[in-house]
Amino acid sequence: GAVIGILGGGQLGRMLSVAASRLGFRTHVFEPGANPPAGHVADRVTTAPYEDEAALRAFAETVDVITYEFENIPTSALDVLEALRPIHPNREALRISQDRLTEKTFLTEQGLTVAPFADIPDAAALEAALETVGTPSILKTRRFGYDGKGQARLKAPSDAAGALEAMAGAPAVLEGFVDFSCEISVIAARGPSGEVAAFDPGQNVHRDGILRTTTVPAKVPQRLLTDAVLAAAKVLNALDYVGVLGVEFFVTPQGLIVNEIAPRVHNSGHWTQNGCAVDQFEQHIRAVAGWPLGDGKRHADVVMENLIGDDMDRLPDLAKTPDCALHLYGKADVRPGRKMGHVNRITRG
Ligand code: ATP
Ligand code: MG
Ligand code: MG
Image (spheres, helix red, strand yellow):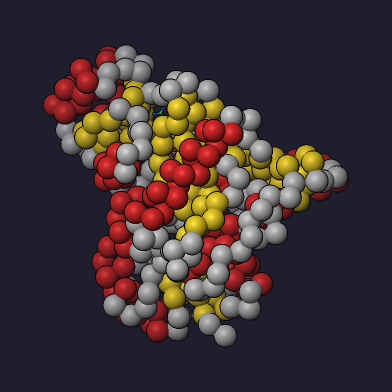
């Protein structure tokens, strides 16, 4: 059987490993950190930093294809790996989504709408952007942000100095604050022969920059849901993409605004594990393994709720609640803001 190499051993890598194993594949996870959540389910784990070329080479030689669970893989590591095995989704998808500035530029080129934004390399640029983008707005680091980390909100121009300080010298973008009525996301996949499939869009609620719940079906006019799926397909095709992609949108009275894209399985797609015959993890493995895409038709209404930090105290109750499917990541220590698991509540089966 083929071996699938997965860069990153967090919960997404763990759930990708489970899906791969269900299809008869073996998995080899590459993860710098000790005791990763994927380590308990992968067939093999390499613990080494992305700077360790010999470890990367040895990893690549044991696998047939390489995929990843997060987008911040150093370019140097990708250079080593790409010379040895195919990487899906491809380098271009990674390059664009690693950096909020290239991402927003790319999305605009595709004819999609993003929030007003400006490149902020330094204090002078921020001063100028206060005239164009204005406030309220959000300063975001171009790279490495997730779960709302690396962001500072500007209510008024007087917040600029403090916000820039919070960036600690990292290149940033200033983004106009979008007065959205709700947020939705599309989890879509593209297969090796260019076929595209999308799961039903989910409606997302964030708290403190972290996803709390995803609800399907989204309570948004069908016209906008169709627009969202078409936008995701446009991105997939433009990137000649193979695998699952997550696209986050703001819904506004003027239509959809793309927030960001993620070249991987996505937290807001976890509902598919209990709402579809083929979930996002299987869909991703199918695509990167060169299989036809599966049927991601939704067969239930689902509310996915993340279990973050102390939410784990509710476990005894949740375990007794009917219609709740628990997915726990096997993380040993509970920390505030740490994603420990999620629950998929079937609200209509
Ligand atoms: P992740 O990758 O984990 O989804 P992130 O750190 O990349 O998160 P964003 O998606 O940029 O963060 O922002 C997190 C949330 O903050 C958004 O889902 C939205 O609720 C809010 N937010 C971000 N940008 C804006 C904006 N321009 N206007 C209004 N709200 C915003
Ligand atoms: Mg993000
Ligand atoms: Mg986001």
